[in-house]
Length: 349
Image (cartoon, rainbow, N blue to C red; front, side):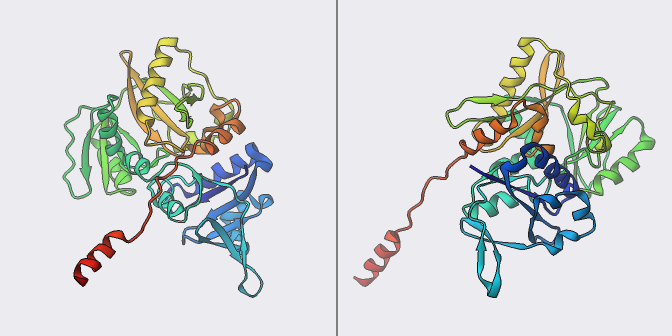
């Protein structure tokens, strides 16, 4: 079964999505049938494989390629005399749009509405994972520890009660954008300006210097079996920032398998299972964990990880094949107008 990659979107992580798509092109090669780009005006474009390079998007050259539209079951372009040219062989769509549009549920809702099969988080999963505060509530309900936090909005007088140092994050943004570590009062103004520059809602958490951090990606098969990546221990500074993640492309070639005990590996995997549950079925997600005093804490859920986390798996082709075969199915609904006809019949009497 073929796959097509949907990327771009209107978000602060738009360019990261492009980088991820170019990365997948190198990994999946001819397994990708089409690359579908969603630009910042919400127009879809069909990008030829040979044009999948940064300059195509940075210069606006993508606009010379075919525009795509949606109908139930497929994408299509307008051919000669307005005739539809259907992408009937697009196969399963990989939702590779990071941030808003892709991870906030917009694309999930659109693809569900048009009955197009896709790999990625469903609407409920997006709602839980897009907002870091809702993520914490969800995790705690499932018995997973999280760091304590305080929530503020742009309308609040921000006066944290947490001791220094602490970390300030936008509530609805990934890729470490707008994140700052605050060690003293003089650093507060800049950190708040940075976070509120991206979101109206922020959270503040304790910052633990040198905390043990582990990343695990995975997914659940239709038979309930989980498939896991290796557990990565990021090689990082005190804070892994945007530049560390995305401007140092060599990082994905230097994955360090965590040197941990089988007991801790099992704890992390069990925490992942509780987070994934049934909510994230159909998606490959990556969970970032902290380990403090031998206890596992969820840091955050990445419902569409950068480069789709291919670098954490030995056989990514198999991963895609597994996901294609494990997509959730909605319960069929039959609309028969029985209730309306009963009312009509009753009124007729």
